[in-house]
Image 1: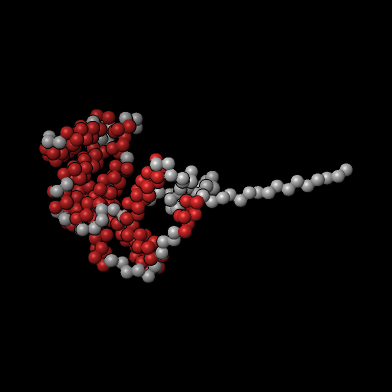
Image 2: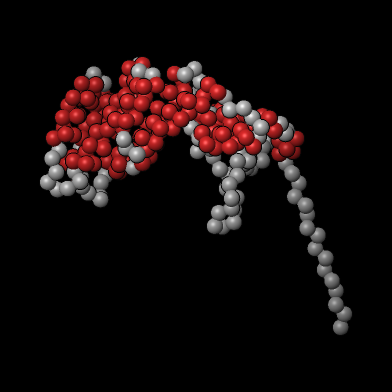
Amino acid sequence: MSSSTVSVSAATPTQHPFQMKIDMIKPSKAEINFVVMDYLISEGYPRAAQKFAKEANLQLPYDQQDGIHSRVEIRNAIHAGDIDTAINKINDMNPQILDTDPALHFALLRLQLIELIRTCTATANADITPALNFASAQLAPRAATNSGFLKDLELTMSLLIFLPSENLQPQLDELLKPGLRRSVADRVNEALLLSSNKRGEARVRQLVRMRAWAEETARHQGKDLPPALPLGLQVSPGADGVMDDAMVP
């Protein structure tokens, strides 16, 4: 009995012409280092910036060394719910920031009210007077002339009715999540940077948005693009072994 051998040739996948063009563009090491350093400084990572500057043989901008530490202290205070300390430090850096940005000031005061409500409703018989007094003195006058502020204040005050509870409505539950603190902290960081005549955000954030816009526009116009265009900002493989495309946080 004769046996036959069947040979199977595996076709090498052909790279898309557009991807080939992308691969031909190689940013210089200096350009990459600049973007990384800009991100670390803008986002407030002083120790990482110092370490990266040493490893990349870069000079950490002297005029930003003091400011970055102050911004980190403010960010950490907001993340920890210590809003009064954060407001005082913001005023120490630049007292005009909150005076000229009523929306940001209100957002911080609202966070402070939320923390007071947390404390006042920690037990069933707790005194809610401090929260009521703070809302009346600090937020109500601002909300009286701004419908958006008024809506936010009314929603926040409703926490007094439902707390303590583990089954809050989604809108109320969002007020107690760390995401709200992070969002306000990001706005504060941007305001502090702009007040120092710096960019309000890291350049890489703008680059990512610009790149997403360019791809969306090209696809809308029917340009010949690969099915997927990963950003190239990759993280370690997940549990399934797949390399995910990591967006800038």
